[in-house]
Length: 183
Image 1 (spheres, one colour):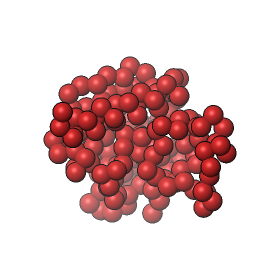
Image 2 (image 1 turned 90 degrees about the horizontal axis):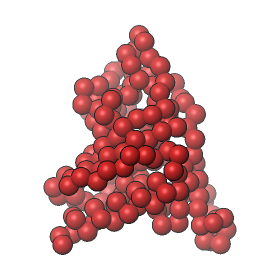
Image 3 (image 1 turned 90 degrees about the vertical axis):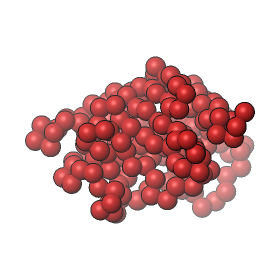
């Protein structure tokens, strides 16, 4: 098995672990040859047109793994695009990575996606702006439970290093991790 396929197997296991810890949020998970698809519920984001926007809490997502993954980053897509400056209104492509590192996983991608959905993360660089006047009012996003085997590469907010025994049931909340800054 080539390194890309081994890594994709690991990514699928991470996604399954995350979904098991958050059964009410992740549904209809499907693994295809080069992508993972699922429905994310209980996750608000702005949808519609600027003049007629509303929030919806159920979103179909696709994460596509390019041929040279992990050297190239995985790509995220909303099947139905949301209103956000970093989401293409036609394709649903979401610009996830400001500074991608090959060690980042599907868990990092999902945490960044949810921060984007909630309006807590944005890349204001003109090259990454796909919607010029998208709504950016923050939305409350329920935290995910992250089991010990699916911790993201995103840094923990606490400057003190935690011992595993300090985390109840070897889980932590999504809010314990830093997200990309809104500039």
